[in-house]
Every structure is written in structure tokens, then in C-alpha cells.
Length: 267
Image: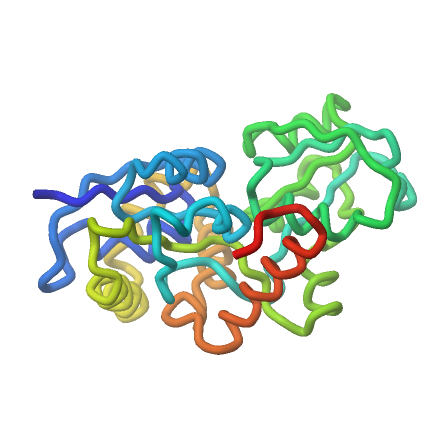
């Protein structure tokens, strides 16, 4: 019987999971794949819909009763944090402004809330990720919170980076940024086995990048090959193979600060 797995169509996820979902990892089962943005998977995981699922680290406090965090396959790193973008210079003042965010339980939004904790409040609107930059450029929103490949393309929309929340986080904590996590549903998947499958999938992706190229590009939402390559280079790194002590400390620090600020339940 096939296991269900859900991850985004972003290049880092399709690159990491190509071998696993194409039957190239010895001993791994077949998978039924669902592609969905992380805001969708965060909600679906709360209902226990998938056996393996990519979610935001910020959503973990609501999910660990049903799922176990795997130490590999996710997105965590340096220089890869969310950006706050604007069309016009706001001099850092978002008071009363409308800010488009990609989901209310995303790590990007949690970092934004921690960053803006001592600032006057902005108006928040949850918007599908692909609509954020065009919406800010068109004046529908005063600012937008963006992730992933938007780091490489926001200038094309005439936008300016008001803040790099990754730089803020790293400067404040000295730790990498925990963005996306891979979870295994309790009782459905053996976590150690699943971690072994994913690590082998990552190893194969690095050993033969050309093998996954067609699959990655097919789901890359019209990204140019150079942007796809830069995206993978940034988000698939040593923490993808293993969180390690530094990765776990980054996760604990993020969720500890969030709980202390009353933004999430305590883990």
C-alpha cells in the first residue's frame, strides 16, 4: 500500500524528494504525491491527512501530537530568510499599513511577528504566495512578506526590501533560520526508516543533479533555470541531510521565543 506524502512544488522540495517518489530509493515504499503550498499542508497536517508532510516549523506546536519531526529533508539555513518588501520607501514604519503574508502559521509570519513585536501594529492579510509581489507592485498592499525564489526576483516588480528577517534572526541569535520541516505521522510511518529513505534521496540528488532536472523544472512555476539552480543551492544544504545540534537549537530557540511571547503553544 502506498504512503501519502505532501510537499511544495518548489525546486528544493522536488529536488530532495525526486528519488524517493520515483522508486529510486532501495527499500522505500511507493508514494502518492500531493503538491501544495505550505499554508495548505500546515492545515492538512493538523487534520492528519498525510503520512509524510512538509510543514512550517512555526506550525509544529499544533502538530506534534499527531506527527514526529524528522531530522532531515527540510529547509533550514543561513542567508535564506523571508523579506519584507514595499513599493515605496516607508522608512521602516508599517503602522496601520496592510501587509500581505503567505499564511498565518508560516515561519515567515512568525519571524515577522517576533521582529515587529516592539513596533506599532500593521494590518495583516493572508494572500496566496504567488499574488504577493504583484499585489504590492500594483498598490493593493503596502508591503508583502515573501520567501523562497522571491529573494532573486523581487527587483523585477520594482520592489524594495524593507527588512531581511533572516539577517535580523541570525544577527540576534547567531543561529540558522528554521523554515520548513518534514513530519512523519505517528503510527503510520517508522520515523527512523523514513529518515533513512529521505537521506538516501538527498544523497542521490546531490550525486546526480541531472536526474531530477526535468521533474524539478516541470513543477518550478515558470522559474528560469538559473533561478531554479540558485534556489536549490540556497535551500538544500547540510541541514537538509541532518539538522544536527545547531539545527535543533535553532528550532528550539524559535519555538521557545514564540511561546514566551504568547504567539504559539509551548512545545
